[in-house]
Length: 165
Image (cartoon, rainbow, N blue to C red; front, side, top):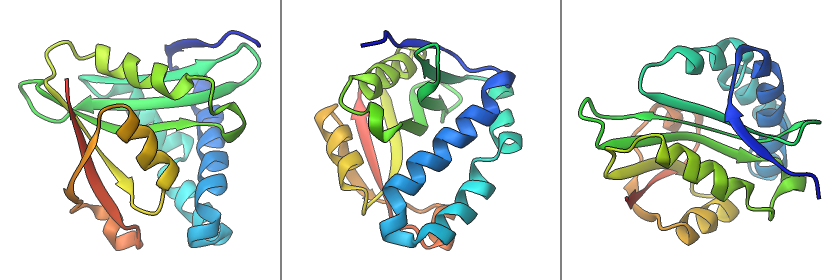
């Protein structure tokens, strides 16, 4: 098995990350929302232009999992409070054919370790994404309630999960 390296994402990765997100979203959400709706969401939310903002946001961590041939996963998190005690995990995705290799756990560990003063990490997750819910539960997260976010207007049913560090 080819080794996987985690590294900070750069400008040259944005198109590949956008493609990775489109692939993972289609694999996960086509059956829930339909391929056309997923394509619309990924064009809007995961465009290289939109992802570029991740590179310059203060108090954030944007990492990719790279095997030298392709990107296999990505994660993006940022502090959610000025005191740095709360991390918002905005994205953590692994290509479906690379799942089960520990890449998701390594990405999660990397973003958590990037914020040494943090006490909690929080994320919003699609309720219908049972695989992801199980992944985060196995990694110490618990559902704390429904999400109140802009995604609700896109017809996505989100819940909040949180973990104490």
